[in-house]
Picture 1: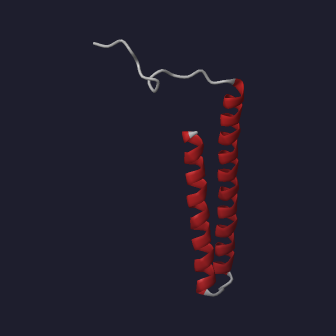
Picture 2: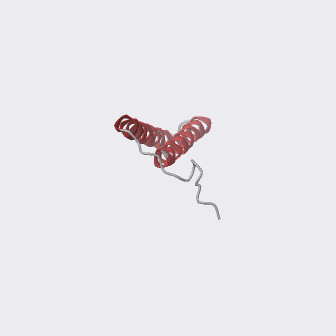
Picture 3: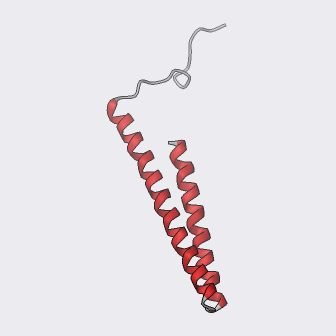
Length: 84
């Protein structure tokens, strides 16, 4: 049995800048996720207001579609922050 370990199994020491950069990237992804979440809420609010004021159905559909897209971006950004 060989006692030589490959370079991929030995954890590297991370420097201060690398840890700072990783924390900054994680914060960025969380901030972007929160912004997309707020924007999704705003679009859902616009869809609800259009629905209560009897606006065109396509306008309500577009607002719900954009809100769904923003929810997807928010969730994917939070998931990416956990991977960092």
